[in-house]
Image (cartoon, rainbow, N blue to C red):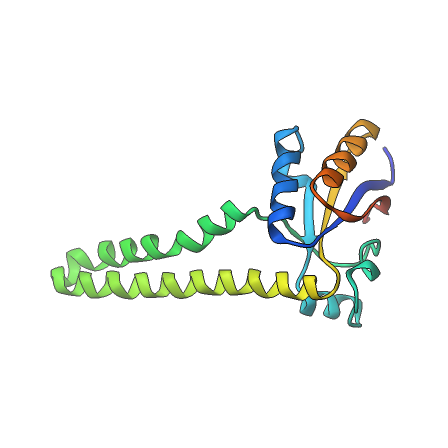
Length: 174
């Protein structure tokens, strides 16, 4: 068993280009678990103990914190999900207890809470995108299992407009 993970590193100038690249890789057999993106600036600073000026500084650092990649569709689902669910829970919780007027109020409160949560999800993503674009691009790491997957990932990412495109080995964490 190798003691390193092979990764492809790519940076993108727009969230759409990043989403398109991941969608293309998924359609060519890459697993969603193979993709990760740079964590928030605050998280990176906290873990590394210093601020980075350009994403190039952290692309090959095995200590840099990453997050799971969520596609645009996944983010839209996460943003939309809380509103109807919390409204429904409010309705169901109170419908049998306080009557229809209380149920309507609870459903409205649940919907409002859901809308606030949706806004927070959207704001968090937009903030992270702006942080990274200001520092040179949105970084994507793609874990590859073999040379064939590596070449396929490099080709797709290049076709999708990636820059700072390269492969590296990351030591496995014990």
